[in-house]
Image 1 (tube, rainbow, N blue to C red):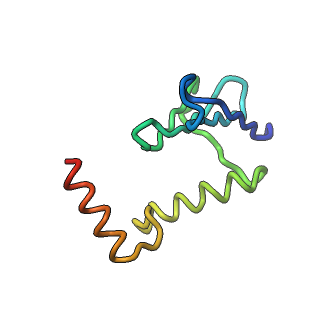
Image 2 (cartoon, rainbow, N blue to C red):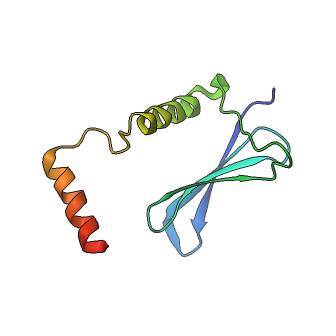
Length: 99
């Protein structure tokens, strides 16, 4: 199995604060990960042909452990980590103002 390659790139030419990452293991199949300007996290699997899977293996343990932690937080519905009551109120209050 080919080793996981990671490429970091500037997402917007006019803003140096946003970067994306491409993960590539096979010739053309690429998993792109980036934050939009709305701070949402996006995943895009490109050039996958008839096999829409992407292996995040332990050959790059740092990337593997980040995905493992993200998966566990999603399963536990703990995407924000441990929050204080004040932080939860701030999130709820902000979402009511925005919505």
